[in-house]
Amino acid sequence: MSLSDTNFFAEFLQAITFGDTLSFTLTLAQSPAGTGVPDSFAFFLLKGTPASPTDPLRPVFGTGDPTGALFAVDMDGPSDGIPQDVSPRTSRV
Image (cartoon, rainbow, N blue to C red; front, top):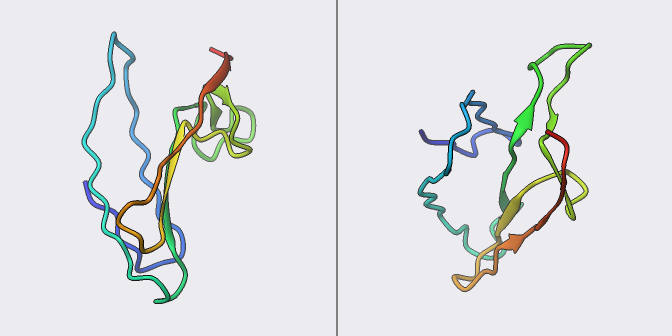
């Protein structure tokens, strides 16, 4: 699966069945510094139903991030960028 930055916002929603582990490989491209608006990638685990007024999508876990992201990476030019690791607080499952 590939996301591009042809629009301001891009998202990918995928239903999953939880098991013992979740793994994936993430490859990011750095935008050269000073070439416009920096990109960012945020990872969420959500529950609910997309576009449902009675069961909207919401984070599965509370985190220290105000958006509920489990982790986020800013792609702002430096190749030594540091991912923002947001530790889960409490489970709302």
